[in-house]
Image (tube, rainbow, N blue to C red; front, side, top):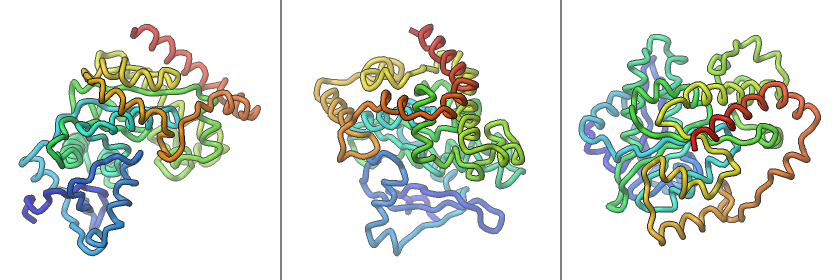
Amino acid sequence: MNVEQLKDWTPIRIYWRDARPFVDWCCMDATRFVEPFFDQTIEKRFSYPFNLVFRHQTPLEVLGELYQKTRGLPLKGLIFHMSRCGSTLVSQMLASLERNVVVSEAGPIDMALRSNFYDPSITEEMRVRWLRWVVAALGQRRNNAEETLFIKTDCWHMIYLPLIERAFPGVPWVFVYRNPVEVMVSHRRRRGGQVIQGVLQPEIFGMNFSEAAHMSPDEYCERVLAGICEAALKFSDNENALLINYNQLPEAVSGEIASHFQLKFDDGERDRMSSASRMDAKNSVMTFEDDSVEKQRAATDEVWRLAEQLLEPLYERLEAKRRRQR
């Protein structure tokens, strides 16, 4: 396929066919990524009959050909997170400005990072290369207003930071985190796939299959969150890193985060970001309400016990390191 035919298309899935990686594409035209998550934007695009009838599926190498033609918008910042901690608020505030392209938890990025689980012959060098290709394709300019690209990763991608930094050296990043009791209560009410046994490879979080299978759901959730926080602590001793607590939001987006990403906003942009911050980041028809106190009250004895045993010490270490970053 001529890569010129992929103008206005974006990769939405990497999958294996006949032991080879392929890419599924969706026609975006000038559609912006304004929904809280990448998949929600793609779902809207599939409401158009054209995208149901006409599909491009190509070998993964076509991404490399596209990369040689265009590198996409400059990657201005990466948003890592603990999960259920306010990172979607950060991405939605940035996405409220037309000059920003914000891609949030895109499946092709995850598959590029975890592809070695599907084919052990895939080397780290290949994953670095594929990651560059995917991000460049996701970050294509779709209108003249767009200037910069931001990526909000899946929460477990914090563990892959060394590989990501090889692909994008020098790109600043933030890690957003929250009181672990509140995060665990959120997952108890509606568990994210990452904290459900069998959805992701437990080796990502330093566990084997047998060990993970014999844990309670809450114990597994605790270990997953601990693996993410341990990675943030391990990798945040460099100038590219900034730690942000949930309780610093939303002000930190136009403050510490803007400074870290070297962003400047005019009064109109600040107003638009402020308006975005008043809405529920994951449901734009609802206003935002801080539920920290309510979640603390709702925590069971088991949640408190698990949090105090492993997560609270990690949280305190993150807090101590964050205060030293000021």
